Length: 325
Image 1 (tube, helix red, strand yellow):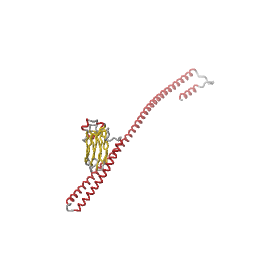
Image 2: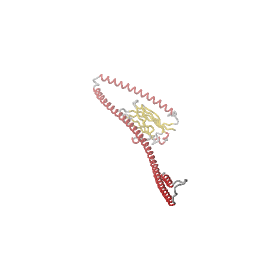
Image 3: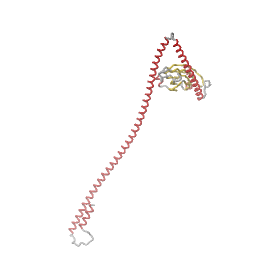
Image 4: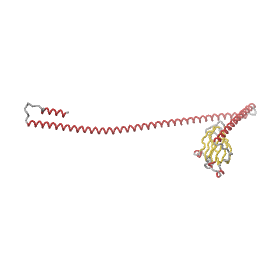
């Protein structure tokens, strides 16, 4: 715009063309001077225009560099934003996992607290039972010392003995009912397993054993069954162990285990191959197990009374070792 304005001023100073100039025409020297001034003005304006163009090109290059820098910076910020989002998601996931682990630890702590309370309750019961036993023992001694002189106390003891006998008879009847139920369940089990019996021609009874044991409170007991001389006569893979046992008192539970091989110590039992592990039995149970003699031609039966701190258990067992032909 400055160039055009100066150009128009220069034209006006020279004079308009196309009309008849009434004034005297300038001399050739004056016209040449005017042309030189016009050329000089035009060259000056051209130089200024070039300098402005160079300045604009410099500004354009600077803007392009800034634009490239801003694009790079924008991509960097976007990458940092994506990384921050991923980190946030990972931290949220870790937070959820930490909450789950905390809940699991809380539940485990509550379970241990309940177990501790149960143990404390059993300890209290043992203490109370011990105190009562001591009191009864003292009373028993007094009664024993005065039996000869006090007939009434003798009659009271007789009545107590009769009551205990009635209780024993009721307990025996309850045990008989449990045994009958066990036999019914064994019959159903044999029926489900194909109705195979000991008298079947496809089986051969190697040996049978009966016995009993008393397991104290907070104690356990095991029984090792070995093929012995039959180990060289039969294939242990086709030898079946049939077992049955009754546990008394009939209303109390006991844990039952069957392990392959000889497992007589705690270390051996901790790494044993279990056929039946920590099965809770009340009253009695029965069944059969295949592959029990696949290790060392022997197996181990274990009864655990570790959960009871007060009452012992009496176990009467019967087992048969049968070879499948």
